[in-house]
Length: 247
Image (cartoon, rainbow, N blue to C red):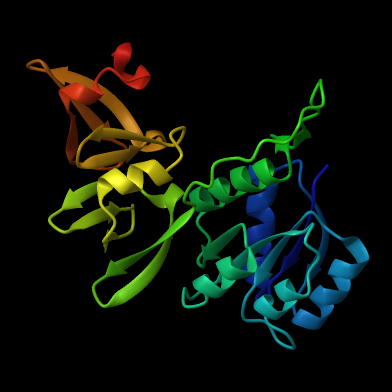
């Protein structure tokens, strides 16, 4: 059974996180709850949890300071109301970075990432039948820096609904914002996990989880997206992919 520590100095947010984890990851056992950095460090040494959810702005020591003194075996997820610490968080090696107020859909994506890191499926450890030499997994993108007006935002790729070419830039469309990056779609496609994203044309890549339906209309194939009004066309050269062959 995986274990976790929750560090949050706001009681209501702590309770919200506890309840959300109980609903979304019932196999997770909470071994400690703390409200300041010093108590968090002591609890980490005592319990050595598999996961630590750390508020960045805590009294006595920040979540970033705590993470720098945390065991490498503990996966870190940061919680904050601000995104200016995101680069520092990922430099430390955080699994994820959650913005307040807590979004359960976003938290569920984080939980899936944590389960992969902990080598478990739905909270049950995966035991290989035959030992095999370790194979390095491809280093796919997990987050990007994108411009939203004058702001530079850190966006995790699982938030993205689709990427689309836009003149010299690539649009990054999420449920909350639309941003721009300078990386061309062609280069971007090579850095995204093909199990999570599918290229539908020379200028568009779609998050597979965000596809609501694939339709054929007047000989053309189109994708309808969850929670979006726009429809994306699938170019002829991309219709032969496994995801579309049965459509």
